[in-house]
Amino acid sequence: MPEFKNLVFDLDGTLYPLSSGLGEDCQCRVYDFFCRKLNISREEAQDISKRLLQKYPYESQGVEKELGISEEEFMEYICRTDVSPLQENKELSTALAKLPQRKFIFTDSTVSHSLDVLNKIGIRADVFEKIYDAKQGGYVYKQGVEAFKKFCEFCKIYPEESLMFEDSCKSLSLAKEAGFKTVQISENGQTCTAADYAFADINQAVRVLDL
Ligand SMILES: [Mg+2]
Image (cartoon, rainbow, N blue to C red; front, side):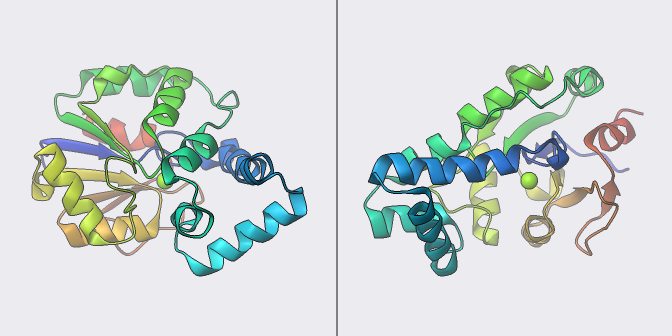
């Protein structure tokens, strides 16, 4: 693998496997949020959620526009998922501490969720120069190439000198369009066309860098 100055990691589904079930907990927290905040039933909360998802690419964008609830409040609540199912990953912790490149997290979730995850999987947060979340990105999310360009400007890195680790095909293709080399983490073994490299999990991916 050629040399890169910067390693940029997505969080969910990349630094830990999606099969751990955290995504399902997040969906429950969306319904909980609407029930509590709007004092409505679970069925009504599910209807609101469905309606917002039909109208907006990201539910949180509709929350502010349609319900007058701040996107930050919504995101902080729904991303505070129970991280207890996650396993400690000593191999990753050792490898990341050893790798000389600058390391970043680029996530559509929140810094607090990222810190919860890192703490549970046993990785020191200070291994990363920056944890860049949706809030810092102005809640633009990884919907377009602009989000990746904005991230690079914010962190003062050049995409051409950077490797992006991601599990989402859409994000991988946007990262590639922005100029990154891409590493796909694919639990099910299916690879995206935008992936320059693909591995079943993050440990295998990082092992290749650590040669
Ligand atoms: Mg992901």
